Image 1 (cartoon, rainbow, N blue to C red):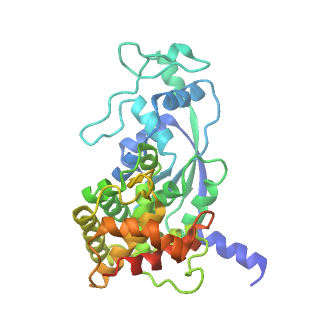
Image 2 (cartoon, helix red, strand yellow):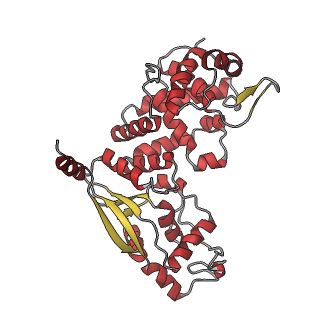
Image 3 (cartoon, rainbow, N blue to C red):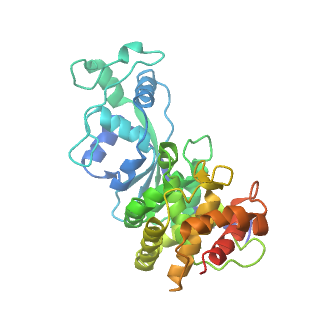
Length: 364
């Protein structure tokens, strides 16, 4: 295939427009349910009041705002994929942002570097913006990148990654989550529900920052992908693991709900077993000096213990129920004997070592 034919082929895979639109026009599209923010995305809206106020400051001062990314579904509606923080801030400012019940209160702004008198102002509260200021905001223009319906889903995913590779603050998992939602919101809602399973949340005991960055969702996807996967060869077929996980997640979302019932069964039984037989500390490193699990969350513990139990549950095999003893043995015997160290290894190379070890360790 010549280069020109390759270019033409790729262009057919993704058809995109760039549209300039006022905040008022974008707001009306949201009101008319043409611009869709999926409920699963509400969790991702995590800007602070200061960050929201800086956006309003930039728009009042005429500073250009980065493009917003939407994906057109088969009915022609636009699903918001990137730009959630910006669009949600503008809707919250106007008192239009949905909440679990009703709408969020109007955004109360804070002082900014150039506009300290924004402090305490809102759209229509006791200290409102002036009519001229509100009109300036409503007429401010935004650039939208619209990926048209009919574009290849995997090509959409690749394009979105590229758009977010130029200084975007999104984590790898946030990008992955956005594309899953764009392909199949039901798949993301299912994943979200699993990530909130009580025993899973308790066993991870992650800090707020890791939750905000969706590390719990990434661990969920790792579990679903790896717990029963054949690990073959020195690298286990897991080189460039982030891309492998991207591809698995996209394929799963495309085919959802295929295999979801079985995956949910294994997932919930695994973490229910950890809660019953283990401890909220077993995903920490065992410190022999203090005779206790210490430190932060350990990916090595998760990959060996949780995936090991999941493997045996998926295959209807018995597994060890002395989980605290198994977790202690992992750090005192198994890792020094079989792994040495996983420090500095690429994620896929680490999995090639930890996943088989976990299956052996959790065998009764």
